[in-house]
Length: 358
Image (tube, rainbow, N blue to C red; front, side):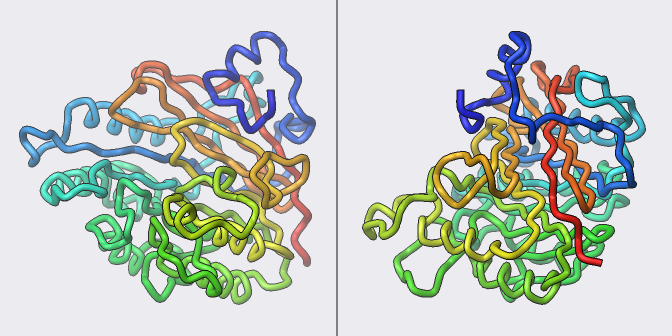
């Protein structure tokens, strides 16, 4: 089975059967040789208001989202089993959220959106001191937050970016932003990355100048330094990395214009991209991306996080990352009962990265 087709659910059965994994996905040295940058990646939390009483949160959503934040607070310092590489969970610099923070931002009920965003802000806060989460949060918006970039969630993100801890660069739109953690450069780019200047057709999801920001940010903040770069957007790439040209009507119906996907990949050339992170698919997927629509042997390490606290099911998951100059190491924590209990997936992903230039 190709790696790109393996979901978290399928992996458990494969692992039990002793399925072999590519070398770049096996942790040969689970003990870090230097203090890495540690963080959690969650996605698709889908805070949902009660449809009958829009001033309060749906009970299913309230339970699963609350349990997740409690768990994120408890995990630092805990032991990681040998089946997931061993060691301890390091103190995280923060939580990165891959989008779909709320559920109804793509609908007309503003009262539901207000309740959902208030619940998200109460749970995750911003700085690690103003919400239930004990570390800062760095979110992007997804299609359930604001597909056209003009909804409540995007307006809230713009406002939050003015005081978000550590941010050193913000886009003209105010939506996209970047920061550094100990020599690793992070960029949050919203729902999709676009748009290329030479293709003027309408986009299904508004990129809000994210490609322009990425190009200028990498040039200004990374340059020839070779420092590792971690990029987050919401939508997956493989389905839309199609050969060009694509007929206008077909492209306009896609979540991500293939011309913009190519522009995104081209913008990364020459940089040490340690990882691309995204959500949206509600299934875990780990692969390397070489700009095509298939998982590659060589390319950018890419991590698609499962839904982390969706009200509609009990199976959820999130990633725990450790990034250092020479390597990114990733583990997954999962639940089958909406975070009443949870466990480490019996697997570790490791991908080497060139060392940053001194």
